[in-house]
Length: 548
Image (cartoon, rainbow, N blue to C red; front, side, top):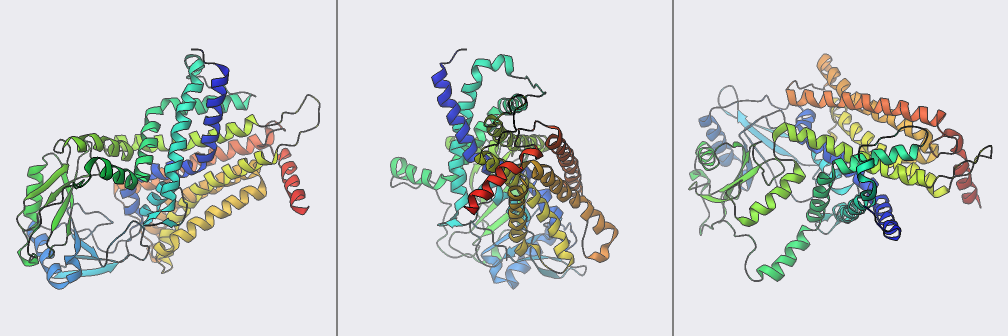
């Protein structure tokens, strides 16, 4: 297929600058997004064993709910009945004081209630770990701090990055069309490093193109959904409500007359056969509009939530108020919207799809990383035969240092937060208040290190830092198991052991990458930004300009 050269140049500029402007933010988003595929195992891994996981009979769970509502008025505003219980949800009932908003409350306190050995109500105040929420926030914001109104500023920035990302995808496909058949699976290692990175970049991009198109479009929708809803409300719905509210009671309810939770679970199972009921979220049980949102999960179905669909019930009568978020039971709009949510969250196909999304997420991060490498290599001034070593442009050295510092620094920072979760607990501190400090301290230190040392040296050194942070995760678990006096812990469920095993595999991958980067810095072409011999030239020029 032939495309005019002037058109190709336009698309090349669009692809290059769209990718450069958004690439480093998207790297953080994709790496964080890959980890959120296992958000629940991460949450379980960092959760201290506050209470033993208890399996109570349905009648006992109903007794816990009744006792909690009688003794703790705050629970009548909102509480959660955990049908499926794990390390992070060991008690059947939990609640918090106050309302939760868009932002993460790192001082969050919850209460957990169960029955003790004598059958009496046992309540404990805990601070649940919010590390998994932090990783999800980094995934959604690219690590950009601050808020704009009621939303994170970074979410809007990531929405803009999603637009650039989509434009870069389209323009990249157009650029590859003339040589698509010939170069599709070509991976040509050798002295021409630019050709090698271009081949790797093309393979990553084309093989996962449908995934990237879905992610880019859904990122835009998630970032600007309020604006989209406002537009739909003004143009399509006008005076009609966009979402029909649940039925309203004309008088406040009496919490002592709620249907037993076991009966609500039975009705949800009857309404959504083949689904597992994971939790019941009770809201406003003594308000004029009491509802229960039952979360239902099934690996065989496409659901609209990050992991589950939802059935809405009336907690006094057990009437089903809404099934629009249950696969196959919603209206046309729900049937159209649900696949977009599911395709973004990977909430279908069970663990197989989650592992695929994890791999796609890491491959997506590598796509943006190799894109920056291509930009740097293309602007390299090559050494003429027997000529002096050329001085590389200062902007090239800076982009290289920023790429290494931001991308590798984000991975090392998340690893450091995971390790800090248990070690801070061992020293009597709760990690929630320290997560942001640990993340940004390590991240900014890595960025500063990359600019101070140069991309060539910092590339291998920061990969070593990533390997050490990843290796420290299973080492910390082993220390918690062998030395319980330290005040740490090591859960032994398959999900939490999977976190340790994955971290160990990533540590090996980072160590291998560090070795290759160090070898490249020593043995690679002397005129490359990634060669240690050329590092001093642009840095010396930068120092000279600062001095003048």
